[in-house]
Image (cartoon, rainbow, N blue to C red; front, side, top):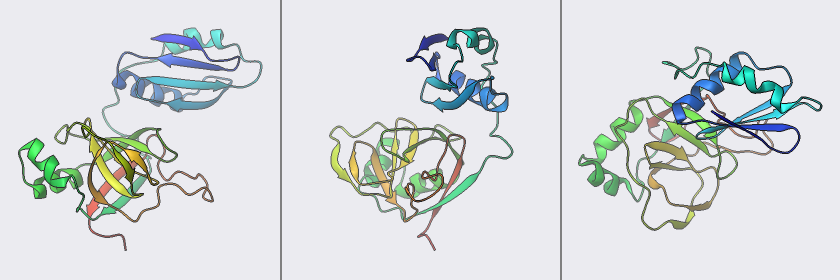
Length: 206
């Protein structure tokens, strides 16, 4: 664990692996340290935004004493979002070839497990989702696309995601959904938050 001050009122915690980051995030949400205003996880870091006047160095002992064992199961009260998907993406056949399975098996694997939102990044509302099994690990595309439509359902590096808006991107697109991932008029604007569970289903949104 490495602790780095960020400005005067924030502290960045760097960890060795995503599992440790996941464990620390869960522990901090369960028992937030005094003076921590916001907890922002990423792949291997956690940014702690502090209330004015809180000394970042005072948190060091508290943080180093937190458990780093990866949680064995999602929180019992974790919100769950269902995302209906039409599996007709331009990379579905390529993903099947990379995994040496049929396109139907790719769909089955994607819908047969629960995915957890690890953190948000890249664009507003873009949630990085980890699955229960490591059976859909494919690389990013060699050449990114300059425009991927909003609602595109994608795979890359063992993760899944849904593009919340039109944007460039290099993930493998396997399907599309009508679910709105980011709406600035909604509270909160992002449908997914760290810890949200996602279930993909094979079919159009009602």
